[in-house]
Image (cartoon, rainbow, N blue to C red; front, side, top):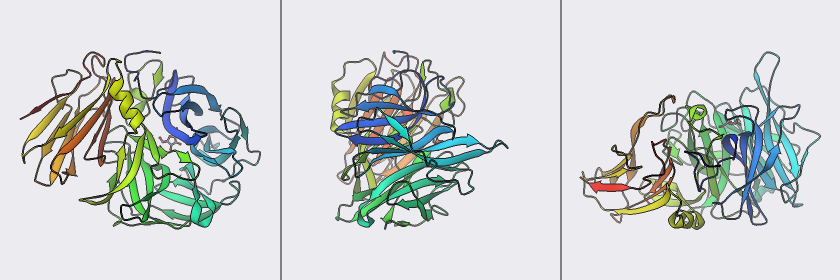
Length: 439
Ligand code: FRU
């Protein structure tokens, strides 16, 4: 099980390839994580849904593979819900090729029992046929309480399609969102999600998450979000169309999804795949390839830049990282007070070059610079860029760094700024520590 870059407290599959989190759901107190998986190789091959479960979102037990390819295709990303009768329904994209070699994608339904051990494929699959789109995938099903019906979001090229249903089997097209809004790279939008959050003033605001395969804030894949209203039919962006909001500013936080919890929750929990399509197939691991991020709880805050999503690692994760004696794994908390122009340098793994530099650029703004060295055999892995952010009004900036043998998640400014990055240091165990110094 142990190899050089396998994390201790983040989920990674025992063997094989993993990308997106799928079908995230909490049932009877157990958190279920399904994931894009090729159990037979460490490359993105014929996709299955792997499965793991946890009672604390930190320690995961891998379960037998849940979904296998069928005659309709391999099993691309999707979601899970608990229906009124207590049955669990999984939705995934069956991916196949046309005789001409084009991608063909349709949405399928699988019925599961509450223990998520037995699965029955819906005989009427596909439940949503392809309307003639090359990218038509990643069904995310949510319950829309005010209209009393199910809504499915589907990534359609560079926009999100919305479909409605009362029985989870027959789906009607409602609307689409995306054209001219937010960031559009040259690749598709992927893995949408939609959750209602309560703003500090008590209003319900809907958060639409969208994965950008390429062309995100940092080079490659990334997760943007939109804030707005959803009336059960259509999503309306509350910000100007050109506004770009990012759930994480790092290189390795993709395909983020929230856990379905029956009855809803004030603090939806989100997880992401800690990698980037630019180099995901080249990472130097052996038995497995792919790591999930830590879970994070989302809430809305009124920041100096306006209403924003803030994310926090749940207490169990904070405690597990604070208490672990496993080498290479730990949590570091800093409270930083800098004068304008001053910097704080964070150096990881005992290396000479800094990995993060925090600078107070003006009385109200800061810059968080992230640097990563090249790794042989990995294209486009090195980086050096900075994130501009609002310096907390109280004057002191909080920074928490979760380090897990090469996966580093840095959160700052009370959850408003996150940078999740993979590193492949010479020795991920020997010196998992933070050196900081003021210049
Ligand atoms: C996102 C993604 C999804 C797709 C899956 C295939 O990373 O490209 O759009 O369903 O991965 O594994």
